[in-house]
Image (tube, rainbow, N blue to C red; front, side, top):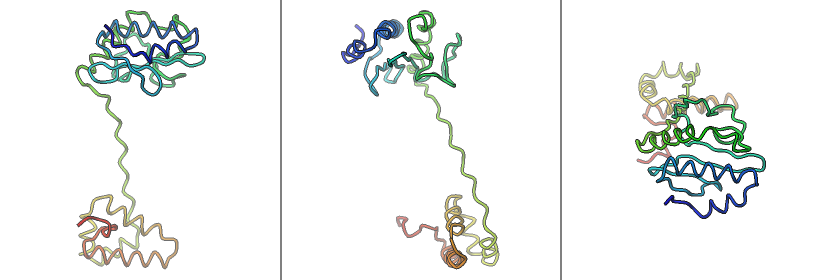
Length: 204
């Protein structure tokens, strides 16, 4: 027996008349492709889990329905039905307003089975890496001071990029020349002792 959720029954019952047959058809195909799928409500709309991970979801709105795969970027999309960019609606099949907007049963079944296999093999969608922050240029006054103080310079060069950035930004953020001079002087004193900019807050 499919692991249905009574809350999804209620969700479908409350949907607009045009949406009910669409939701029922999608639900039927999901359980046909993945008999072990678990139905649940997450984020206020029906979701389906297979092998312990989210497989797909569907939702109904005032004028359209949506359907999407949680690992859509990993699907081969051999039939070219997925909308991964410039979507007009939530989900990956664009706006679904009737059964005619759904792909052929065999196509959707194959996509569901492929998505389930991704879950079974524990294949995850890789998150794009955030671009590394470019280290700011050492200001001239700090660079000149470091040239005159080899001990401070050795500690500064050994610091991580983030620690060097903290000193550079602290000096550059000074609003007046007097404040900048004071910060530069303090920076050199701390660097001579091998201290980072926020050494006071670091656990010993």
